[in-house]
Figure 1 (tube, rainbow, N blue to C red):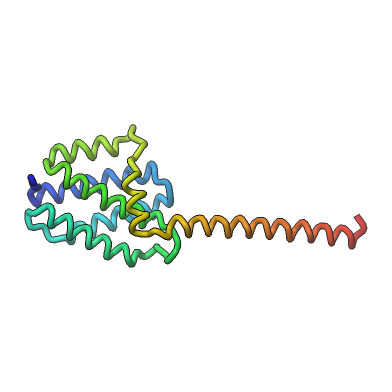
Figure 2: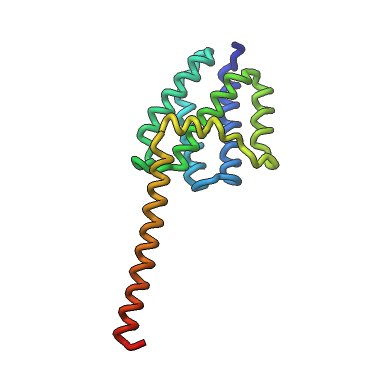
Length: 174
């Protein structure tokens, strides 16, 4: 496997995170601020991984560090979905894919520029969704339960006010 020199890896990481932050600012599907913070956290975590000229080893260490951090993600409440948590996982998958498939610095930069181009509003989500389902399988269910609970609350409040209007109407003779 061809490998990146340390200076190239640092430049690639910085370029990737800047492009990803810009992309999240323009196209985040969840809380934009939380997604941008998650990209910054990913960048800081990636900078702490010791680089020893073996990209496979670097990738494994990066994945372990991000997973460790995600297990105590500050805005991720148990049983609730977090846009930042998802963004961090997406950054990990995306960056590891770049390292694995594009070890040539110039090719990696060109790929990042093309993927996060201003005109490219569609980001491939398939792997991100699979990764989320594997790492946090209760997220879709908790989201559905939360939605159902909110719908039931709205219906309950509506019924309460209808009954209240009927009772008050009968009291005041309307």
